[in-house]
Length: 414
Image 1 (tube, rainbow, N blue to C red):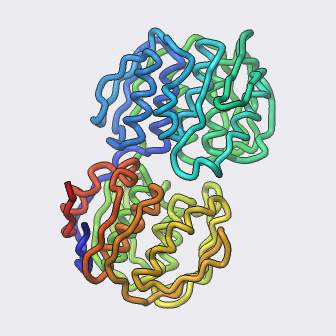
Image 2: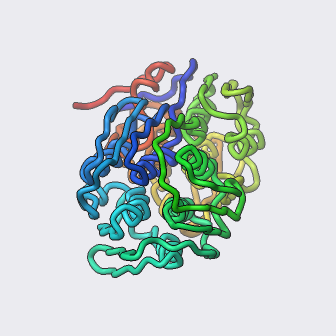
């Protein structure tokens, strides 16, 4: 329950990048030595991935804390728990390490946001290039009885998780693998950094061509996760939409540039210095168009939040997310709050800003639109009921407590 109309202010710290935590946990499967991850986000998706590892035979300590220790001395199954796989898109990242350790992996259809619209094509392309045979049915069965083989290939899509699957598999393939049209996002770079600490030779991280010299026996490592720039951007929108002033700590300024560039165009006052990101009281203005793009473009994960911000910006903004059409459908609920929206097609929405929002009952259909609807409720007159909260907690730790720390009037129904 959110009572809107209150200006927020104060300081909030972000934890590690959600989209880095999942591949790093999967990477722990590549070695039988202990690995320690620091600044781990205390979120639902990480808990699910940790339980998946436990189900495979790993020893996992520190679930629900920011420090996790994982040891995969013995792997007793090649099939991650189908019930948990159905809750987490990132479960597909376990396939490469399982093939490396056991020569076989069986995976139920992965869940998460928009499961029916997010295919495994990039993952399959990479794995097949490295000698993996697969059989599709109710579940995918992957086989590499003679081990993974190095390869040189071009990914038809610069998929983040597809690139990460390719890197994890290449780390175990004895020889040189080259991945072209690779994703360049910071969390892909972070996976490469962690694997280097485990003994993998990797070049080109952060560029479209990544070279991996794999096959060595990997050692355990300790790695501290970088701050989550999407979470930082979310708190920035919460501040801007309520006319407040919020300091966000724990994220690198270089990771924030695609976000602050758009916020700056919308005349949101931002200040970035080291790991400190401050949003000043502002009067947002519309911009002609905001379009998503692979890194270092504006991230699709911020589309829902910037759409809500545009409802309070004077003027008209066209928002184009060519990657995931269902994100925009979830925002049609804003019309019932008084927003002036026109959904052109599944990928484009026109927002006429400057309209007052009014509280109502809202449905968190996916992680990012769920946080965006909380932001809308904070800017609205009256009270809003938003559920289920668990959808948002998949990617935002202690969201209710942190909103309260900034002065939001929020209650949780039991």
